[in-house]
Amino acid sequence: MLTDAPPRKSNLAAFRESERIKTLDLPHDGHLQGIAKSIESAMTTGTGADVRRACKEFLEQTSEFYSVPACGIRVLAARPLRVRENWATELFGDYHPETMLIRLWMRTAVRKEVTSFGTFLSTLCHEFCHHLDFKQFGFTDSWHTRGFYERAAVLYHYARGTPPKKLFWVALPGGRWRIDWPTTNRGA
Ligand SMILES: [Zn+2]
Image 1: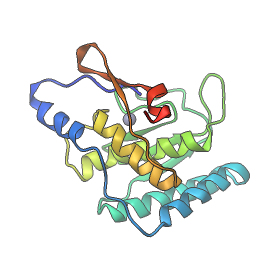
Image 2: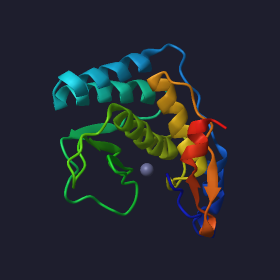
Image 3: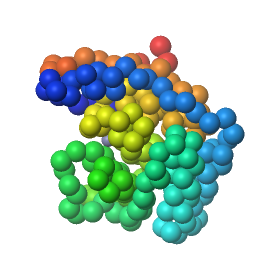
Image 4: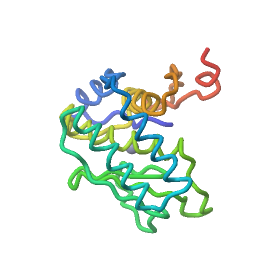
């Protein structure tokens, strides 16, 4: 994971705020864990429509909890050949702020590798956090800041029922950061 470079002056304050907010409120009812499990079983034994239905339920729950409009979801078998590369395109999904649509795909474009459940859920949480940036925090853009990745990780670990990890970062030239996975995974 690599952060975006800080933007020009007019957006810098919002970028810094995105960087500063490192956590999200979380529900306490455990519904999301149950829905995440149904995404997992749909990926193993169900159809694409089953996966989509479970993701839709996940997004309805999270949108209701955070009091934001529900976003649309499309689950594709493979990464589309043409993906708008302007921003917010991850390896396994994207989000478009104008249409509030999340798209996830279950296979990579080139090697056709199947997405693991962990990566799929993590991408769903990541794309939903783009949605929150616009609709809850009111940012004019949704940057990949350290705070953004921390928020997405908080939501992911909650939904997966795994303990959150402290993320360790390494500074790069140009004000960017990359995650230090060995240290993060060691939990040092
Ligand atoms: Zn993104």
